[in-house]
Image 1 (cartoon, one colour):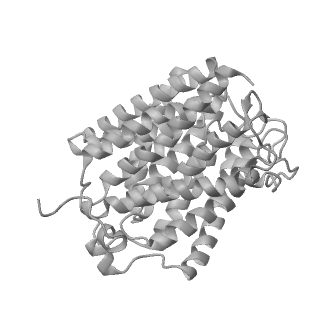
Image 2 (cartoon, helix red, strand yellow):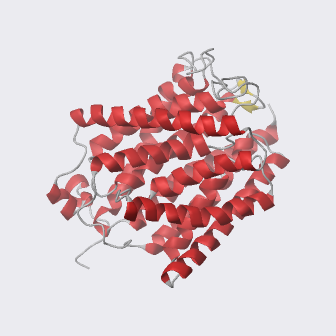
Image 3 (cartoon, one colour):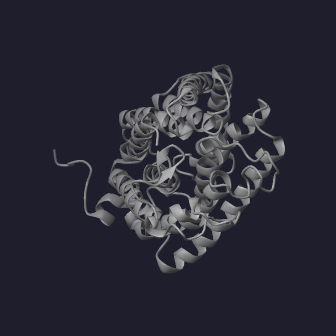
Length: 393
């Protein structure tokens, strides 16, 4: 065990949890109508709790178990069987590696929340998210990070896919699942209401930005120069994408908005995620510069051209950003084209299939969408019996 590595990953684990609670909750909560803000908080909080338990019970074993299958890790580490305070994973206590990866298993299904807010059934959220994490996310983790079929020595030969912190594992899977759910749900009745609290959106984005240092820097799994470089390029990409998103808004609409600028931040963060361990600051600036415009145009395509109500633009920002960053690894010569593109296709198809099947199965057991009256009155009061704001004061 290395003490410095352990100390850094303890910090990184806390930072990544902060990305979901409260970062993502505030970011998404500020973007919806005031009558639905608590439901967004509830979705993020409940998903975090449920994924933690499921990752402990089976998810970690499926992703990082000792099985020899290229598809999944097996069940030998159910309930952390065989793992104690003295067990090691590289230079880290294995229980810390488990906890760090658990925070990734929390935020990935939590990202999907943005696609279905304001109209989805709470029971559906829990059941779909739990099954999706175990059947989609955890196997993909094994393929890429657990020595499975897309890693070095797998189906792409000695040089497998390069995905440092989750462009494929986190952002592509969450983005595609979000798009599938948005299509099945259909559009909201009222799509014209602006974000109820842009200040809350900014605070959530800021927490996500800081937390991303743990997300990308922690993925080095060591306290060394590689972690420092990953953190640095993460920051540069986020800053650059924020500026290009705002500039592109100014060119197109005559005004640069706060919500737009911080959405650009998230686009830059998602795009650098897979490449953060393989590129330098100049490449990161290029990735961020393109991401701010590319993801904004993807929002326009999904929302206005295809008329898909992915409420908070999960696919356009996270999905497109993660896919773009994964491709840029090959562009900059840090990964093989066949492995990068092939892995994107394989994981994309698998995610679509699993997500569609789960929607079809889960909606038989619990309603997918709330009724029209609940949607109109807001999920906060009707579903959860609470209001975010005292309307009498």
